[in-house]
Length: 479
Ligand code: C2O
Ligand code: CU
Image (cartoon, rainbow, N blue to C red; front, top):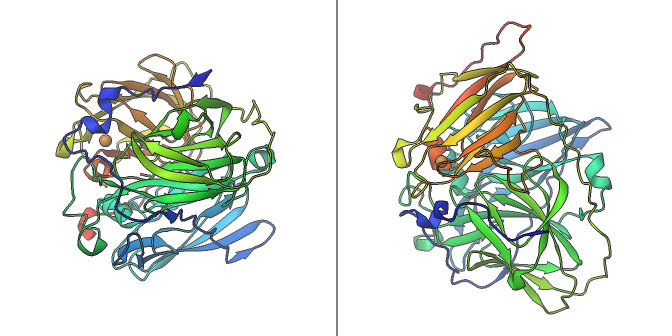
C-alpha cells in the first residue's frame, strides 16, 4: 500500500491561522544546494573522539546583493554536520564567540540533563568555552544541535543556530540503504525567513507569539536550491528546522518515495508514500528512486504548491537494490499495570500558551519519574479543533513510542522511536516514555515562540535507590 495522505486534519494546517505567511518563490537565481561539510574531529583514537563546536557570527550570501548577517556553528550559517558514532566516548568543547549567552542543545541525543543536554540550565557565556563528554547508547538517527537559552531560543535559531548531528551505528551502516554523505545521502534542513532591507533578518520586527514565519523557503541556508543527482537512489534527511512552519511535502509527477526513518531510529519497515507532513523539529528520512528519469530531467520537491528544491538528474548507474523490508526492531519497554497514566495538557495560543495550566518557570521542577520505569503519557492539545494549531510536543532525554492518537492507531510512519510528535487541536496522543539516564529534562511545544512563551515544563528522572540529586538551576534574573 502507498500512503497518499498527510494524515493531519486539514483544518489544523497553519494556513488556517491568521498570522500564517504563505510561501512564495523568491526573486533570486537558482543555486546549488548547500551541503554542509562534515565537522572534522580534533582528534580520534580507537575509543574516543574529540570535537570543538563554536557558535559564531558571520555573513552569508543568501540572496543576490548584500550578504545577510547570520549565526552558525563552525560556519556562518547553520553549521557543519556532526557525526557521532554510537558507543564511542565523545568529548566536545563548546565555544561561544557570539556577543550573548547561548546554550548547545543536543536535540535527540540521549545524554544527561540538564547540563550535557544543553537546555536552559547550561549557559555558555560570550568568550567562554565548556567541555562536555558522553557515550551514546542509542540507535542510528538524524538528530540536531540548536541553541536553547530561555527565553531566546527562537531568536537564536532564526539567526541560524541549528545544525544536523548524525548518530551512526553498525546495524544501519550495514543495511543496503544510501549512506554516502553529500552524494546519495544529504541533509535537508527546512526553514523559512523574511529578508528586510539589505537582505537582513529582523526578528523583532517579524515577531509573532504563535511563531515567526516568512515567505521565503531556505533549505540548508540556500534560497531556490537545486541538487545534482548522480545516483539512482537518493536519501534525504529531512529536518523541520523552522520556528513554527509545518511542511506538506510531495514530489512532481506525484513520484512515490519511501520513508525509512523518523526522529530517533529507522522505522521497523519502509513506508511507501507520495505525501509527507513534517512538523517543527521532526526528522523524516526518505529515499527517492529516480528510475525512469534521464539525464537532463528535473524532479521538484514541493511544500503545498511552492517548489522548495529541484533535483537535476545526471547520468547514473542502474541500481536494482531493494530497501530491506526489515529495517529495525523496536524493543518496546513494558509498563507495570500499577503505573498511572500521566496527562500533559498543551493549551492556549498566542501569549496564552501553557502546559498544565502553567507557564514555564526555570526554577520549578514540574514532575518526576523513576529511571528505567516506563510510563504512558497522554499528551492533550486542548485547542479548538476548528481554529487551533498543531503543537509539536518534544521531550529531552528520552526516545518515546507513539501508542495511539485519540485511541486509534498512530500514523504508519510513527512506529519507530521519536522525540517529537505533532499533536492536532482537540487530540490526545498517547506515548510510552522511559528515561534511562537520571537528570533534569525539559518537555515543550517545539513551535519556538510557544516554547519561549512558556509552553514548557521540566521533569526530574531519578534513581529510586539513591538520594535525589540537586541541580544548579539557571536563574532568570541573572540572564
Ligand atoms: Cu529542540 Cu528543548 O528542544
Ligand atoms: Cu505550540
